[in-house]
Image 1 (cartoon, rainbow, N blue to C red):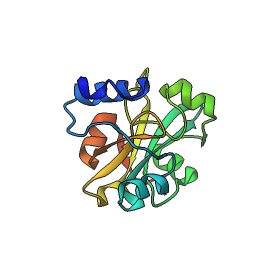
Image 2 (image 1 turned 135 degrees about the vertical axis):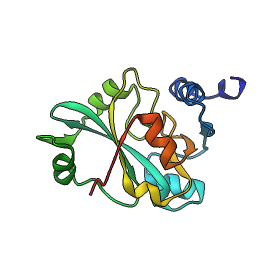
Image 3 (image 1 turned 120 degrees about the vertical axis):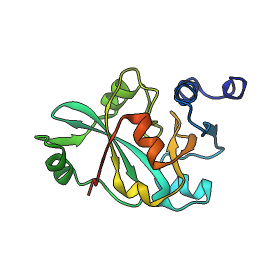
Image 4 (image 1 turned 180 degrees about the vertical axis):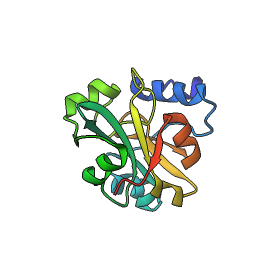
Amino acid sequence: MEETQDLPDRSRRVAEALAGIGAQGRVRELPDSTRTAAEAAEALGCEVGAIANSLVFMADERPLLVMTSGRHRVDVGVLAERLGKGRIRRAKPEEVRDATGQAIGGVAPLGHPEPVETVVDLALEDYPCLWAAGGTPRTIFPTDFTELVKMTAGTPVAVN
């Protein structure tokens, strides 16, 4: 894995997980932050909707990773109803790190210490190429909807 040796440790873990599932996309580090969907879209020259935001929530006090299109927000009430959950709230920074081993703004869809229940926003199907965080706020990798669902074992669902 020569190409990953210059990546931060958390991103190397993501790159190894991607290689392990046979993903075509490779993690790369950008010179500027990709912490927000708008920053990532600008750095990559793509639509903000093609950014697969990784947002961590607590659903009935268990981590829930929501992969959502950068073009809209998650409606936690609607999502709780669709998933049959009692309550969904935003995870605190320490809860995000505990669940994923990664910091807010750089949470990848995989490479976590333990599997995290995941939903994948149906709006991401609108884009042939998606970009997801690679474990840090400056690393990112390309994927597509089908691969994203597969790599996360996620449930496709409308999140708003």
